[in-house]
Length: 582
Image (cartoon, rainbow, N blue to C red; front, side, top):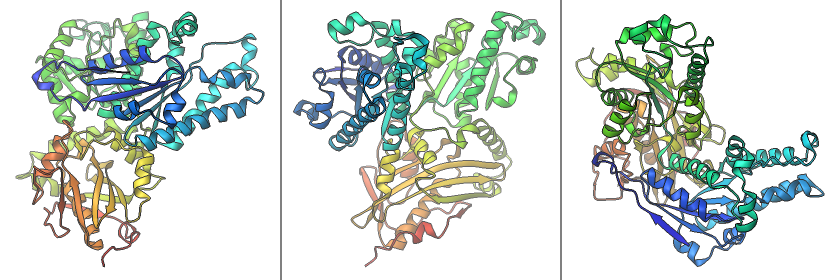
């Protein structure tokens, strides 16, 4: 059974809708309610969505031997919803063996689905804890009591999914914990209709799943812009001064503002770029961050906008300065008017309703704007500082007669490293998160990248850029596959932080030199993902580019603009692969 929902765009400025999402739900319980709610959630995210449901209880059979209807549906997302399968683990005569047996059956299903639908994203739901404690707290004692059996099973599920690759785990267990088992599981619905979740839990679970799918296709949100007065502290600082604002442990409300600041600082230390947007005198606004109980300080913000212009204008300026797209931005403000103004003028910006200050961080956490399918890297931990350095570079531009003179003054150097299993995490993250400079928008998994690189002659590198202002980190990755005397670029991504610094041209020169060593051509893809305009601008500047072609080849003798970047790469980048010249 399939259904489809189509979004209505909210403005001419936001007509770019992702390719249709076709979600197949395979479950050990009834999945129709989740599918219906999920399609509604994806539609609200401006995505056309349709769903397919395997017959009740036939999730394993459909995984191994897909029906003709399943094949005809051609899913690009497959969701495995089997919340009741774990029940046999703690009651088994050998619970540990039962745990591994269950995981093995899931892996078999994943591998079969990958064979039949190689381009599909597979999402496995983990197992919710329904709070079953037949012997009270003593159940936590035996290692295979209900509580520990479930915790161990979910832990092993993550380990196995990470190892096998291209399978995401949807954390239904944490949703159950947050809602409470009595609000999550409806025993009457389950035994009468085989519907595991309550209506409320279905809504929350579907919203979380939609955010995971959106994050996979579009990348997670990257920029969090916050108001100051009555958002980071209580009161209007321009009226009552820094000593009068409500912040810290002296009052319940002040403590709630401090907790929200702590949550924001945690996000900023784990890859989310933090900025401030305030209608205030700039110096007065900054004083709030000097309050003795302020958790956040000026250095925690990559951008700080204060004045009396409309906040939508400041958001546009902040995105331009940070080279981030507005649709990667979340804006938080206590004012109904300010939220409405930003929604009306910038509908691509996420503007959540967070309620009262006591609810701010818990509601923001539930929305899961910043979650993704890649691990945290060293670049994430220092991202705010990286953007602050970029601000210093931009301030330097005006001191030079030409932009090329400015680039020369940077003394830029790029270090090229081969992609290996040991350094794959950052490459995978770039592929998952990058939108603007992304050749084809494909979100390759770690396993898919390794499979490409395992083929004879295939080649993958990551690039680390540094200059006189500091090290920008590993900011670009290229994956190429050798087929039919042509190097086909399977993925080429680059962080928006380093656009227009000449790195893309330096990497293209490296790619062409590799092709020259092997006597082959280079093939690039011309794909409009609706978000990769910066890559397509670069593509149009390459000599011989034909915009009518989906793919086009470059001779290794193509003349490329020489930008002032020193390129360092070990001899192994070339010598590890044999020449294919006759």
